[in-house]
Image 1 (spheres, rainbow, N blue to C red):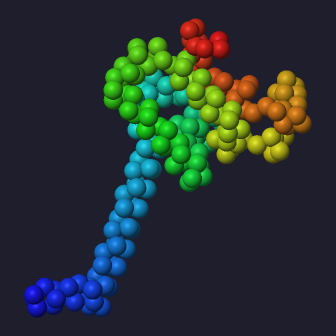
Image 2 (image 1 turned 60 degrees about the vertical axis):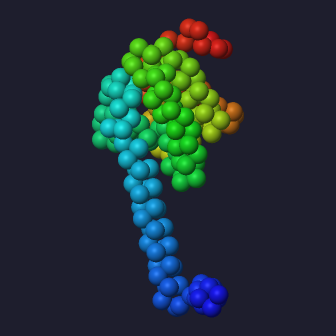
Image 3 (image 1 turned 90 degrees about the vertical axis):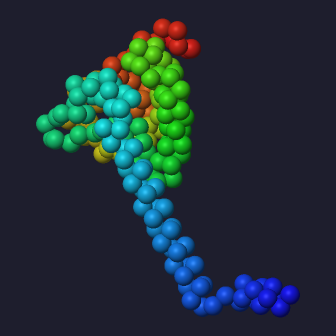
Length: 190
């Protein structure tokens, strides 16, 4: 019984060294977790990662002004499909985990299956962009900073009207700006 009491006393009054070691291990573990988590987040924001499942879509982007233009500014998949703010990015990554699940379950694991579901997937992405006021577009494009005098007459009219009304967002008019529009036959609402 004395041995048990001595052991209990040792447990309830740890040495300063033990407390220091536990705190250090917790801190080091937290740093390692955070580093691994951030590395994983950044690895899933690359074109190489996206093209693993969306190779035809990534190839489409190479034909647009978002890929090659006079200024040399280039957007990659994550620029348009992943919010830049950390909390919004986490929410989007959780949503994207569902997409990975369906890819690995075989729902969209071939180009043919992906093309068959593309209209539905595009509709979901457009709804997401509409709901967040085209946040990802606005990371680079903002009505308030557009020089309407440098735009074509139609673009200037549409952009200034959208700015004045505040009711439209980028995706209302620019579906298909970076991707070919999918076949929407059979998609609800089309």
